[in-house]
Length: 488
Image 1 (cartoon, rainbow, N blue to C red):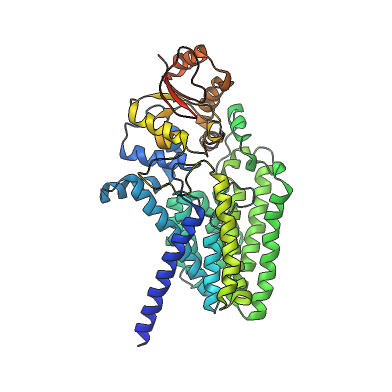
Image 2 (cartoon, rainbow, N blue to C red):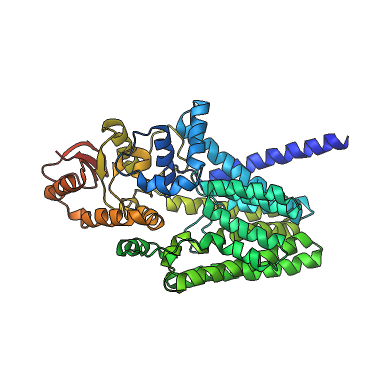
């Protein structure tokens, strides 16, 4: 009887988690090929077809050598014989589900009451696309990203530490590392604080800093130019509200600790206090990296991204406490809290992607004019084509940060939005990046002679333009916004 009740409860919990996953994705939307997916999706496609991207694959393959993510997704496409778009959507659903499942397991250790546990998970589900204080991160992206899988593994490692299962924790952290080494390093840091009771030894502190301390290469001028495009590499550029987002959660976490101790929740108190120690330590590391001369090469490790894990657990604890003390079993209170919160997050995403459908289903025609042009390029140009676009094309009105490489499956000259980040992480690409974006300077005033210069210098034979009326260009495709033109 007890076993049957337990199985029923587990099945019920699984059903609720599946429903929360679906609702979370409907709130956050789904935009494959956008933003950072301009790195990951082309890498997966090249794993499936090595003939793709013959001119620029280093801009998305070199930095992925330390992860199995793209290989895993490509293998699942081959094994399932399903279209890539369907497989990627399934992985996105699984990623969100695993993150929420990890949140549920953490909440079970922190809260005794079921309303508090589910309020904790629901809070994270609604806030998946909440920006994390100046770090250029969301809790979970609107597209498949290895960070989500690494986050899920990190949560399982945290649970294993709480349960005293350190071998299992090490395995979970290894999985996180294979998915996203940088985010795994922060999870390792927090788990060490959690396991060592907040007073780690000198050896433990060395292990905490190890992920940030192994590269001290001198940087080139080109590398510096690329780094200057990343505002989060420079603490002096952070706005006051971003600094508020750094310190306010830690102050609230200390308050959570006091509340937990009053309520007899030793696990919540322990996790909150260790999270504050983790935050203080990682902030100190970040300040050292960003302030001390000679450590510029460490900036691409993005030490302020420790805030991602801190925010996730902070929101989980906050949601649980709200459920425990405010929402309880009152359905109207749940509705009054979560419906407006979900609506705000939904409309924020519509403002982020105003010219694109909220949920970009695989195989469905895109309503975005830029993506339509990219799709035409994929279907009507040779695989070995070399394209050029406005280096800031992803920021153009109506483009909504969709990646040309991800949709067109063609090579292109470096852009000034996503490629600089890769150039800082792979220094040998910095000179290539600078040479190409310098050649594209003044793009919006280019004439035929300028495009011919790009062809002579880089082999460019196709361009995507917002103004197709340039004399001498043959533009076999045009829509209301852009044209795809051939350079003879």
